[in-house]
Image (cartoon, rainbow over all chains, first blue to last red; front, side, top):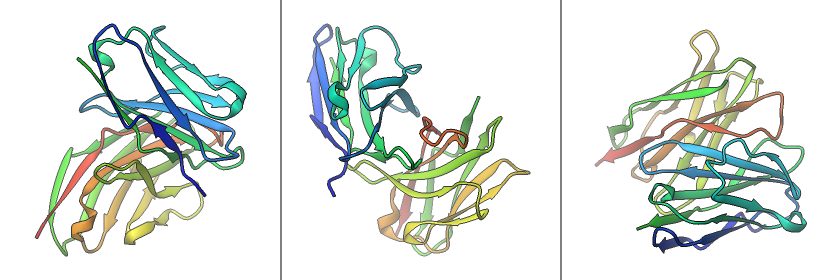
Length: 113
Length: 115
């Protein structure tokens, strides 16, 4: 069984540009989560999808961040326009409906210069 | 509100020595507690989890953690450190009452192993 995959693994963009991160969850997992770790700080929750619906987006930092999960499969997280403080590692995780264990992807390292 | 505090951002032990990584939590509801590990250039991997069954939880690679409600602690231990244990370890908590709840992480402890 394939794990959670994320693309790209690393992205370097300039301030003001747009970046889109992609997450492919484990097949059949209804729950999909985005987390972020800013340099030197803790991993923080961003939002949670159940299938294609946003269940909890309380961690989204501001309206420059837009997450989608069309069709309830893969998800994208767009940052537009990117700011320096958006740099960090963005993790995606998925879980099945009945189990609490979340399986994490390898993360996307975003560097905004 | 739930929170996790990991004591020590960096811990160094000798190969073969006891590993002890400290974690205290705060939760207004019965928690699920986790330890995750991140090896260099890899994603987060679940080491073990506490879900209100046995208070002593055994995980992969001989790690274990004990849930102590009176101390609100969930410290991670391993009897004998290996060089391959060098990684960053995260203690985390989520809400027992929601099986799909978000996870709240501690700030992480980087474990170094001295030969």
